[in-house]
Amino acid sequence: MKSKRYCKTAIVLVTYHCNEGVIERVKEIQKYASNYIITIVDNSTQKYKQRYNLRLRLKAIDPNVIYIDHTLNCRFTAYNVGLQTTLSDFVVFRTDDDVFDEKHTFKLINEGFEEDFVFTPYYFDNTKKVERTYQRPIETLVFKKNSLLAFLPFKTAPSSDWQLMKKMFATKSKKEVPLVLLYKKPHGREELAV
Image (cartoon, rainbow, N blue to C red; front, top):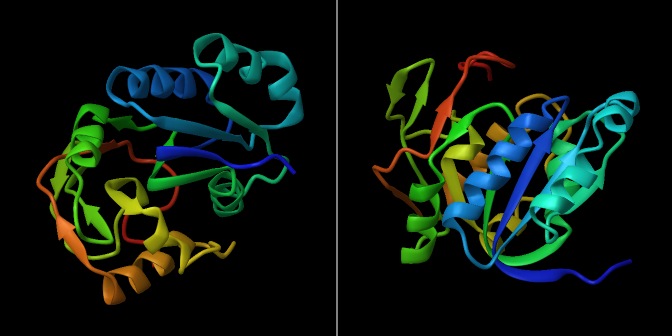
């Protein structure tokens, strides 16, 4: 097993058949981040992976990207695998098909915070959401990795991210920050799923 690499911020990005979204996300992170490692967990079908060769394209853009050819299409299993690749102070989760303001993400990380995690408002289908509960996209949080570790691994059942966040919101210190990090497109599970 390879030794883990240290970075200030670990970014775990799970993808399924959306290589252009991954490339766009990596380029955006490069503009604003320093001392980071992006781990791409590719849940795409083997046929898609062979046809579009994301691994090769990523190495040309950022040779430090960690690419994982993952065969099980489960976001939560992919998160678990991605989190095992690095040692870091902070963790953020990203998707391949939403829009993020990485300038705000890394401003928040570079300024630091005392709490175990911070949460932010977000846009869903062009409507601003300022909710103070765990029922939110996990991409709206920035975690201190040591605080997150106590709640891992993610389960593989539906809404496992909400179950993890529910425990963290109830037991860990948190801070609301008014910066918008996520502009979520409607897709996947319904926003109010439990």
